[in-house]
Image (cartoon, rainbow, N blue to C red; front, top):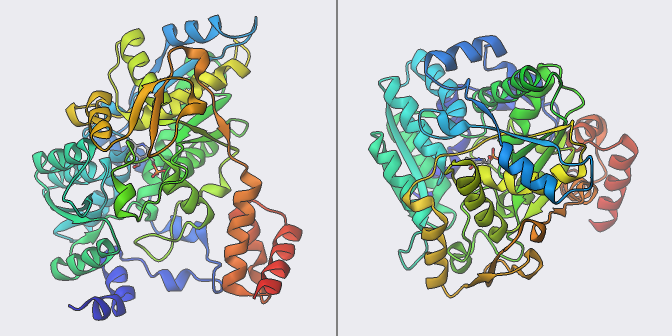
Length: 466
Ligand SMILES: Cc1ncc(COP(=O)(O)O)c(C=O)c1O
């Protein structure tokens, strides 16, 4: 059970705990057959939907935010200000879209004879796995990166741990660092449970129903496809699954926009920075590294490939999301959690760009609770020495100062240059492959949404750096 010997058994542990022969999907050193990976699910979209509906997952309301739309129009040019709709994913059993991800894993694991589920997550996904395990009469173990080395955890992290326990899961909490993956492998081996990773094809196929429902419900409400869907972006599952679902439902012209909270300058693996951020997901600490290299996960290949699906990627600040959370509660009577409101903050800005007959859809809300409220997270931040005050978003400094806007027109978004993320992905691939790209160029082009000539140019550059 030493670190080295558990790591040496990694491939076998992951094969046994997912039932997926990942090496068998390889088409080269990096290339693999992504659609064959998705086909391992064994169900098509209507079957996935049927499994979810039986579990009370999905078919959540699509709500029109009339008052927020009205407010945006007051600040927009004449004829501008798209209708703002939000998919109320808080209506799922454990309060977020993560039930969609966990539902299929639990269903599959039960049918395959596993007695329980294990997931490494500090987020809402733990509660979703716990809920779906409970409904399938299975055990759940959640491994949560919770504390810094002082033993301090954010209110939102503790809230999520309590929720997992309330739903019957055993929660194992770790400090920040590489031990998480080791604890996961050891637990999988010891228990023989299913690895309900966030990044298996079961998880991503479960999110496709969200995109398909958004297309169907938006058409029913407005008579047309959504012009833009905003999806909070961290590990890439939300973007990938939602975009795939939209496409499957025929909404090919909808602009898929990823949204993250900017935590520029903070390091996720740093013990010091761990509690200097006020957001536990949907931030750049996950989204930038996962977009440029998706396979840094707890299974050999990640079924979430966000660069393939992102049409646009924008950032908002922590203060803007706190402001938006209060706005949604005060103007629409909906108290919802931070991850969905990250996309809503961007929607309040981007709706101004579109015409008033157009529609922007925020792909989710999540539940709120004592530990998720802005008051709890801001009080914690103040105790960590973060300077909190009102002001425009340009004055927000992750880890140092949170500035909550006073007015809607103090909100803005920062564009992320997707071309530079693609270049970063290709540089990383070049470092692995050298100039010997062989017939993997097609995969790299698709995976980074680049042209073949861009791939070859990056490989040549990579060679020069070698
Ligand atoms: C409620 C909620 N929304 C969005 C996200 C981001 O999803 P993804 O990690 O698939 O990008 C998360 C992930 O932690 C979440 O819990």
